[in-house]
Length: 268
Image 1 (cartoon, one colour):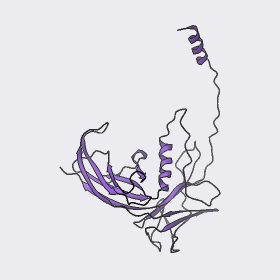
Image 2 (cartoon, rainbow, N blue to C red; image 1 turned 60 degrees about the vertical axis):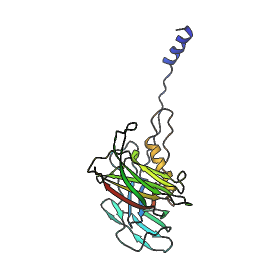
Image 3 (tube, rainbow, N blue to C red; image 1 turned 90 degrees about the vertical axis):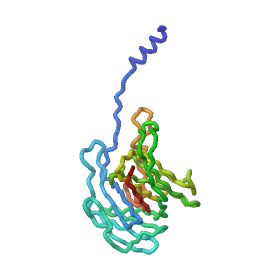
Image 4 (tube, rainbow, N blue to C red; image 1 turned 120 degrees about the vertical axis):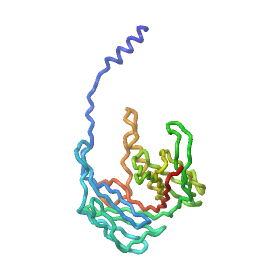
């Protein structure tokens, strides 16, 4: 090694170390809202509050809020009731209608916020079947499910596919399957699912038609989950929210969705 090289290594190994005090935000108590209204006439809202970054324990739930669901076109209003950690719509005047807009209001103390979402058109699953497939990459050979639907032409649509095997939902972040229709406008949508199936297994596919804006929300959650931890990784984004009207930041999203579900049992 040349003398110049030795000097360079020496400089690198003897560089100064500086202790950097990272100011991690310690704010807590902001609302976290997970909420949806489906064309199956089901409305569910989960309310909790944030905890400090280094805090211990689960985020506290909020059981004392006033939560209402409004149908903008008709003026109908329902109050959701607290049931076992969630606010649910027991019965009322609001009805799920394609193309109608719904407003969810949440009032907790002096906090009074709301979000709106339009009920999308339901896109049916045309067919769901199973094929024996050869090994590909990390996927071994075996039975795999394939679903087919068709994106309506001339509309701006988005989808999420939820998959159940033997009545168990694949719901980890890396199992999320969602997209808008920018690359499939008016064409068939073909899903081949990478989950191995055995003879006797049941498999169910729920195709959720969701507002296009929800894709942005999902994207941020996925980026934050898989953003990496290297020195050059981008910092996590603030989770997008469609709730407005409050003085403090709100985390989470309210959206309407319409869905169609098909299932099968694997046979030889």
